[in-house]
Length: 193
Image 1: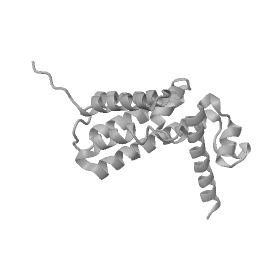
Image 2: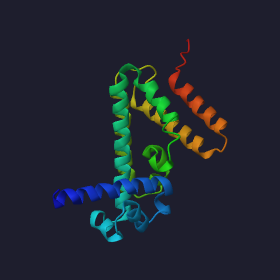
Image 3: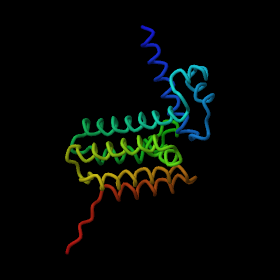
Image 4: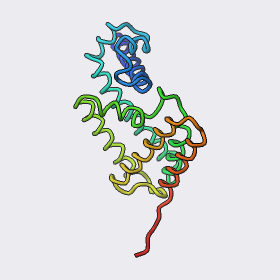
């Protein structure tokens, strides 16, 4: 392996560790020393790859939303016409119950981004718009959002439901929140005029 390849591997390891650290502890809850330790490198090595904690945070946000886009593409490819219901059920079920450090960046980092600098907010916004566009461009699927506004509403419902589910103690309350969000996203009511 070349030196450049080792350097890129180390950078990626730091970025992945930073993503986990920021999801778990928040931007203010972990410092460069903690991020470096999580990646198994020194603080000096961290600064070799990132000029600041804020720069690592911004890249972690982009990587996290890229992972979400990869997940959406996976559901679109694997489930075709059934991709949207399958994605919604996965997000409200399996993804909701994963460890916070492994959670969806959209759900776990949005509040951190809101408190962050303009660079992180701009990167988040661009990636969020890409996620919404990808949802709309996906294969025709029952109840899938048909435009960016509907996609944003659906994403808001998903992250809001998962956030509330993670915040409550009673698993039955969490299940009722997830079930209500699933009903809202997978049943369209048609009104007669």
